[in-house]
Image (cartoon, rainbow, N blue to C red; front, side, top):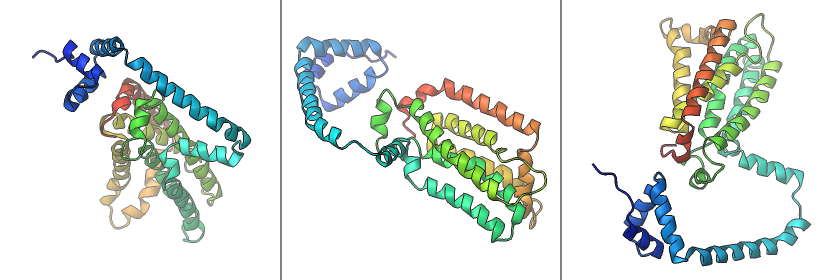
Length: 290
């Protein structure tokens, strides 16, 4: 089968604005991945000389708007609170939605269960088991057409794709780590057991795994799948020892974090997922399932 390419006649009709909508759509989709046809269409547009006046009009309009708004902008420089709000807004949908509230609810809930619910030091393994999957929810809500109303514009910009997703993931982790560390610090002390940041490497490995899987199925689906696998790993081994098994599963699951062997395995998993993510980095530029 011969591959389809843009002909001179179609390129000329597209440059003149007379091509049918379906033909124009097929052409625009094709030139995204065919440099030769993109050059042919660009040459047709330049040959008509229609692009220069249009760009000149756009430039004049942009300069006029910028000049009209320059004086008020200088008079009312944004304050620190306004700049912080803009930074949080730019950090991604996860920090603008219910995820932060859910994170705080989990942290405060663990403290309440320890001191009011009578769990005492048993609340530490429970928080430790939940901690690695908390960033996944934020990552799943950080990028994609189902969670970000500006996804199509952002994905088409030079700053979109994996670069923006990693920035937003870093913002999610920068909120998750101090909140959970503070909650762990105020929980009742227990003898032995993993340390305050024992969940960090597992959380990083799961986050990178969700991003790598998200390059195939979308960020939200990838994060949900990894979280479901972790929930199964924690609860399924305890199903054979019902009815007391589920009550003891958080403490038993804490063994996933203890010791150099466990942490080394998580570190290796994080490196492998990071390598796969690097190989799949271009998939986020036009991810249709996100």
